[in-house]
Length: 343
Image (tube, rainbow, N blue to C red; front, side):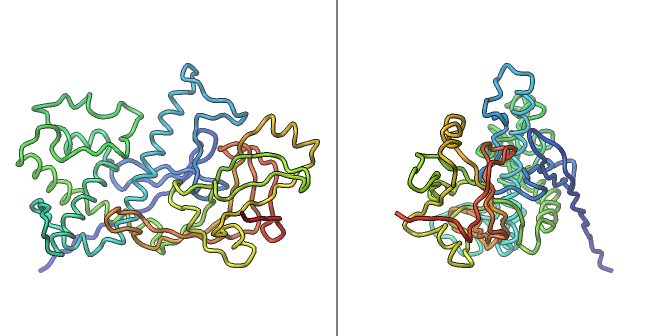
């Protein structure tokens, strides 16, 4: 008689007040993994530019001698680790064929001439290593990434309240581990922990659609007396933010297409001259917020292992704020009636 193991992992989502705003928490399916805490705006996920935590609503910075500094520092560490882990979990759905081909008993050695199955196995094993580094708590990471014969494990991993940096990839077994220790660590994670990771990934937006807000930052620039306002250049929005990138915008009408003109475009924030003088003395940058629906498309680049996403606008209103925490709203621009220009 065959026996089947069914793993049921509930997705527990709740909101907690962190820093200057709320964050959405995705509870881990096991105490072996960290919970993921992502920034929000008006109850929905925040994409693009993130709250820097260290900047107060009045524009001043939290100094390292202030009582709140270390609390902010730990919150930034958690959010930074969470964003990285969240994206790595989302990638799993687009690599099913690779994980199906992955060798769970031995390492796949990279060679110049690899068969397709070997290449898939090697790629999947590298992703598993990334996931283990991104998701394991410090206590759990010691089991997989610390060699007690060579290291003092308590000093190797982040202190309490801090999380592993995304760029910090530790290798199976820890420093100076033998081939036996490395393989034992790998097979232990793959067979005991990875099934939980795979099931967790399936619960995260299974329809590949995520509603939220895209946030962009732009320089205030020079006041245009003839037009009566400031020109905000969409080319300054950048493409290195969280999950969604500006070039992924899919315009649905001629007004939206003006935002992503191939030659670059600017939109006018109208403001009376008498108000603009004082305004420019207090603020150098503005933060634009778009209500959007993001789509997970696949992998942008097989070798670079980047998640491909696009997004569409849900509203024709662009909210304007003066702080990255999005607490000081100073205006809005209607996309349907905005004044724009191209280079």
